[in-house]
Image (cartoon, rainbow, N blue to C red; front, top):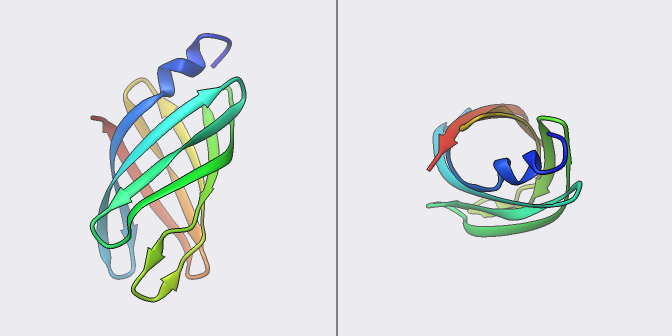
Length: 105
């Protein structure tokens, strides 16, 4: 993603995170400012979790979100690849990595 292509990753994605307790559906909102990434993650269990401090390089993005879950705060370190309207990657937690994928809403 060079220059203006970073803007192409911006928007809302409907994602599915595959966890040991089942598939979790979420909405992911991404906003780029140069190489910086911010946004929010929204799901039925944790509500809306905003994040800042993410990074964008080429077709890859990374960020950390810490949603409040019934078990308490859960830090998730995301690494994603964006190709057109598709997003996929891993969210690493204290329980290990969870694969996720989705499409632009």
